Amino acid sequence: MKKRRKRALFITFEGPDGAGKTTHAKRLKHDLEAEGYKVLLTREPGGSHFGERVRDILLDRKTGKISPITELLLYESIRAHHVETVIKPSIESGTIVISDRFTDASIAYQGYGRGIPIEIVKTLNSIATSGLVPDVTILIDIKPEVALRGIAKRVQDVIGNSKKNRKGLDRIESAGNAFHHRVRQAYLEMSKDSSGRILCIHRQNKFEETYALIINELSRKFDFFRKVFNN
Ligand code: TMP
Image 1 (tube, protein in one colour):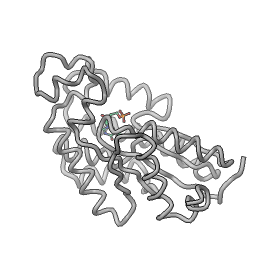
Image 2 (image 1 turned 60 degrees about the vertical axis):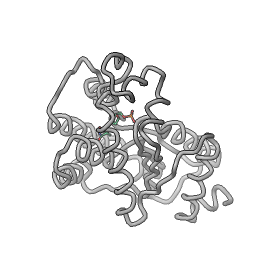
Image 3 (image 1 turned 90 degrees about the vertical axis):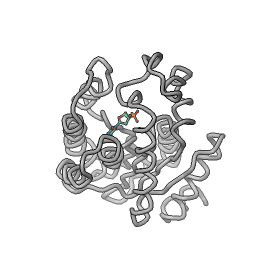
Image 4 (image 1 turned 180 degrees about the vertical axis):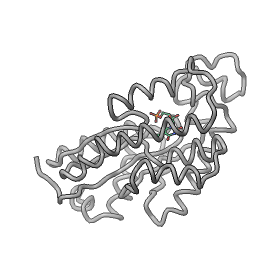
């Protein structure tokens, strides 16, 4: 395996539920590994044994209603452990890390979605990460109606705002249409204000078309990707 410079890239994927970011993150890992790079694909909530256990609590609808700040603190505790035990040691040893969601998700979901003041979310993000910021973030944008429809047919009733058939959705997915619209809007605004860190990709009908846009944007931003992908 080829190793990169000492501190490797830290890349995150973000987007509304059902945007398809996980599949793109897996493909990027695959393509970088094919070029000889060491890559770790991880996720939030999750990324460690502890994080995966708390993920189950956060997403399980049996958990029921918890206050927004309780929810935020759980995401942040997962993050603190994830950064300290997985992300930092990996990038410092030269492994490229791709995380399927990170700090921006807390701003979008708990800040704009649940209504916690953004400054509080940002402060907790910075405590949990000890100031670690991704080198680049791929935001896959999609309208919530389309995204939620795509998660599964089971979601159709959420779009129609009916409560009767939401049982297939997890605790966050079932938060309702208005919530998911706020999340999407938040991501779009954050990408405008991010000084180029968050690259906004509008999801296309075909996977390959969306993935090509991701590679183009990464190549425009980093010589590294231009060379790797001959772009
Ligand atoms: P996933 O489906 O992308 O794995 O993410 C699980 C859910 O957790 C998703 O609905 C977004 C939500 N989430 C937050 O609300 N806040 C956060 O900080 C993170 C990382 C995820």
